[in-house]
Amino acid sequence: MNKTYFHKLKLSNPMSDINHKRKQLFRNLKEAIAGTEQDFTSGSLNRAIFLLAVPMVLEMVMEAIFAVVDIFFVAKLGADAIATVGITESMITIVYAIGIGFSMATTALVSRRIGEKDHKKAGRAAFQSILTGFTVSLFIAAIGIFFSKDLLQLMGASETIVTEMSSYTSIMIGGNAVIMLLFIINAVFRSAGDAAISMRILIIANLLNIILDPILIFGWGPIPALGIKGAAIATNIGRGLAVIYQFYLLFFGRKRIQLSRVNLQVHFPTIRKLIRLSVGGIGQYLIATSSWIGLVRIISVFGSEALAGYTIAIRVIIFSLLPAWGISNAAATLVGQNLGAEKPDRAVRSVWSVSKVNMVYMVFVGIILFMIPTTILQMFTMDSLVIKSGISALQVVSMGFLFYGLGMVMVQALNGAGDTITPTWINFFSFWLLEIPLAYVLALYLEIGETGVFYAIIAAETVMAISALWFFRQGKWKLKKV
Image (tube, rainbow, N blue to C red; front, side, top):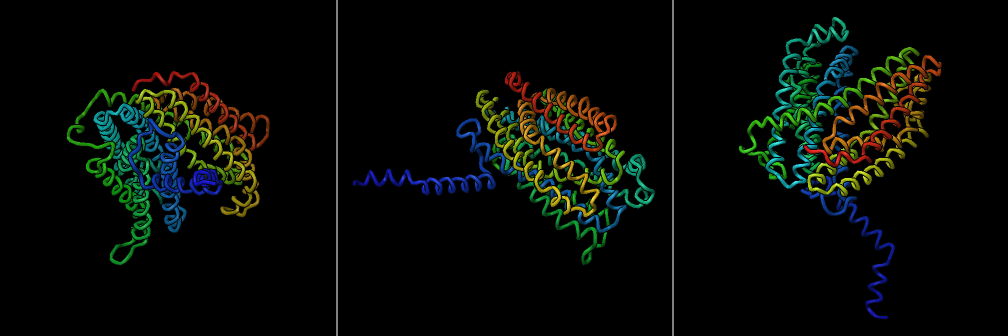
């Protein structure tokens, strides 16, 4: 036997192949977290999806941690403080909607320019997005600063909240620019292909928030206890310093997207295009979130236990969906860059690949929620009636996860191509014209109870997925100019 034979035997060794794949996986994971400049218009699609999806998933987890940390510390101040945070967060939903809308538009514009290898225009689009978002945030800030008490009264807050805790609302809405800029600038980095930067920025913001929250809320050494006002200040400082770091990277980071004096000019054609694209994104978010309010109103008919079970179940579901949203965001970047590089076929292949990954993840999570709902719910409450309602919500809604996993990728693919209006109409039909009326009929008219609402959610998710898939297969998004 010669050396060639042993060489071939070594190459065909299954253990050797497994070790090689394991090493390759760890190298890709390290690269995804560390972040490197990548050209996602060529090379392995699976590797591209992995390098984009991992930091995007972690970014979503960081967003969730922000909300959990705040409510954890504020909860120690009593029910009024918790209610203040809840009411204020419901109002800030408008800021999130506008920020997400601008983020979608930014992704479509910047990723297309990156795909075209036109970094100068990519930088120009990035600055117009930042400028537009900041300008809008100033108007929102003025409303929050001068009319916070009126807003709280409008939302039905108690007199104690209005007179003693309105400072939290003033600071949070008044400082909405840091939320807006975080969304938009992170979208710039993601659409340029460096999602790891967005992840690291949110890690920094979270660490600062975790450190500052207890110090400013309860006081430490010479720092006085500021109560709920301290929570708002801590959150804004954490996000504000993260935004400063974002600007540092934009100007001095030597990344794909780099701003210079050449970019710092108002370009109204780009701003008009940005606003036109963002309207669809804002509409999508508002339609989706407002539909949940409608469902809450229907479920409230069946009592506080049913509503509590649904509330806990939905929070569990939303948390489990965060990685799926991160994976879906990868589709938007890949579509935008590959259309810019005039590679529509590769854009199509990338969407199908991301869809498979997302559906596998969603089915896996759905099985867990369906199999052990009681164990999950008992982490939050031991009330048997609440748990009974929550079990129904988790088991029924999780049965639609396969379609929802497909639908969210298809919607993000259309958004990434610059077609933000089609998903808006899909959401409008699925969530307003179908989900809410169907939930009412099943739950109240046919007297199925709150379970009827959960079946309506499955129906809406399925219709959304099928509709988005149909529009995607039509292929008109490939011709979209942005």
